[in-house]
Amino acid sequence: MNGRLVKELLVILLIKLALLMVIKSLWFSAPTVPPDATQAVSAHLLD
Image (cartoon, rainbow, N blue to C red):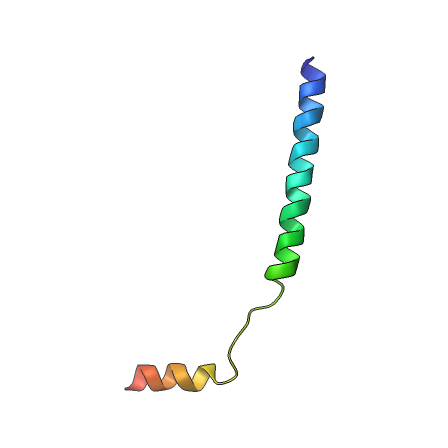
């Protein structure tokens, strides 16, 4: 009974880890920076 529970928890954790890695690679692969971000930031800070 105890060994089966450990195996089930391990499988669930591995599935969750795989899903988190897929989500990370899909949505957080690269930061999205606007093309004129430095000018907008400098204008905001210097005003």
